[in-house]
Image (cartoon, rainbow, N blue to C red):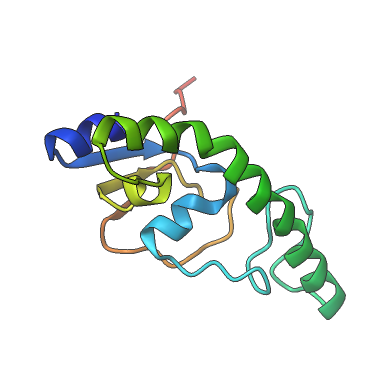
Length: 127
């Protein structure tokens, strides 16, 4: 969808929970410092000691290498189709509106850019 939207010069609308490796933070330029924002599955809170902050930072390092490996086939596909060098991050930066299924109950609050709209509770059903 991203590649086709870029090829046809159409605006992109994202409806998602999150992108692995924090690409959604990077694409939208939202601050996400590992010294203050606890990473998923670390069981850390927003009140961390120095050693917990170091652990939080070290938890992020392998994801950079794994994500480059995981998204490389898509970058190659997009580059071949668009006839220019393109990265996944370049395609994500073209997003016009981000509808994030973001719950402040489950996730830590974070600053949001003007084109990001939290839409929590989408999958809730009435009893």
